[in-house]
Image 1 (cartoon, rainbow, N blue to C red):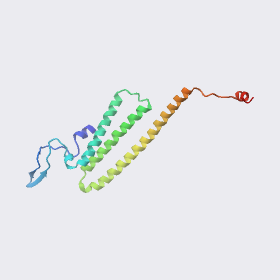
Image 2 (image 1 turned 135 degrees about the vertical axis):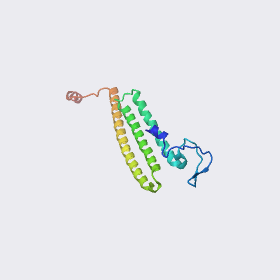
Image 3 (image 1 turned 90 degrees about the vertical axis):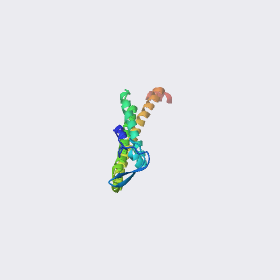
Image 4 (image 1 turned 60 degrees about the vertical axis):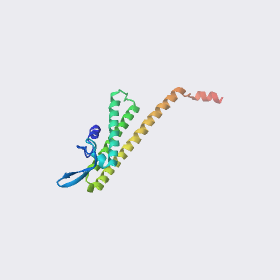
Length: 176
């Protein structure tokens, strides 16, 4: 999905070449077009800020998706919680950056007069999504940290050896 979104950015690609600013006639009306190259993103020329966000989110989504595939085919022992946690975090990154890419696309596609309403709805949805992802990340991180702490504690206890225990007879001998 991220690969396809990278090849087809919102607004499409320029189909013609215009190395210098010029005007084209369209129904006896002059339309000014910025200089551009065929095959480049129209959004990059019209709205560089949104294009930069779109490109960053989509690239992060693409790289994290490739990382998921790579991790799954390498044969890492996913029975171990740490590797499963790493995979889970990368999946969250992939999904969240896809959501953010979607956000930029919807904002770009929406008519300017509806922009404020669309922006508020999308921003609210993205904030809720990021909040849920943040809570899940914190919860899983605490769980993994607690498990690692228990394992570390068990290793330390094994190195110390068994704890000496006293029974009533030993206490009587000490008291005498």
